[in-house]
Amino acid sequence: MLSQKTRYTIRALQHLADTWRQGAVRLDTIAEAQNIPRKFLTVILSEMVRAGLVISHRGRDGGYELALAPVDIRYGDIIRLTRGSLALVPCASRNAHEHCNNCLPEAECRLRGLMLTLRDEMAAMLDRVTLADPIALEPPFSDDHEA
Image (cartoon, rainbow, N blue to C red; front, side, top):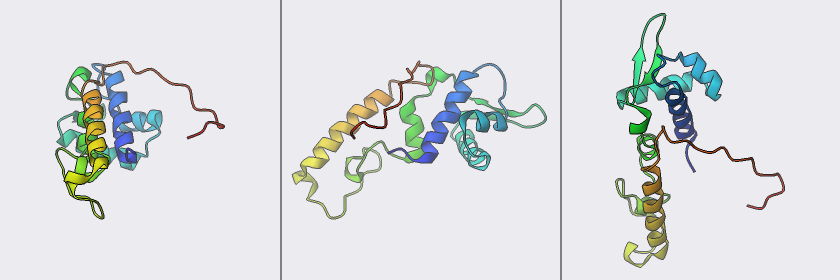
């Protein structure tokens, strides 16, 4: 699952994408609209400034805005910046590969093969979708659904 930090980062960047070219957005505005704790949002946006995705403006009319057009920011990049990898298990990571503890040798592990395939499919999709792409809202699951 995505970490809370990654989810907050995506929501904050989506908010900035929705206000693209409308000027800087105040931190409090983003925090309230996206239900993100203000202190956590400060840390997240500072990291996104260092990563080159966000610009910070100081002063009375200060705030934040995207440093790049929404079409140039891919969800895969956001997740990699905040999570480090798209893989669900360490041995399936392309950029942060680690051997799994308590597992079979990698050459014998079918789970690793499945996770590599899943990681590659997920990466292809997340690297195709940008902050500019419309994402349909889905109705919530009913309380009586089966997992």
